[in-house]
Length: 106
Image (cartoon, rainbow, N blue to C red; front, side, top):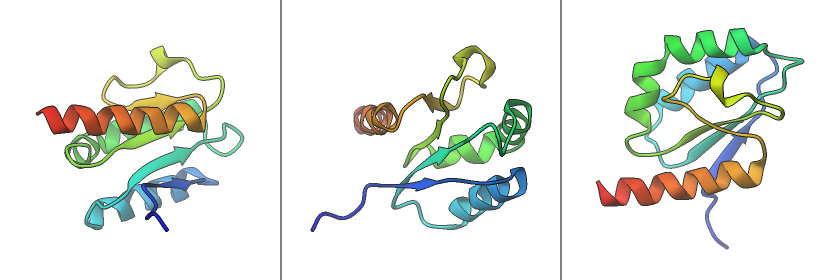
């Protein structure tokens, strides 16, 4: 059986999102992570605030593995440029694949 390539995390609060993000930074990155964010749990403003707070760590993590925000009905203009964002799981996986290819070239 093939090993999982990515893990989907569904945080149900801003605090849980932050805790999960901190946990992946502590681990040796062997998985890609997709954060499935529902606006009923975390507002776009809260999410943007956390992403900016952890920008340096996210960028460092993304040198080896991907972190993708999965959020339906998103406006890409509202997210920080360093963050990968997708409206569906399929597109999130495509981003992971694309980022892997990019890393292989650099």
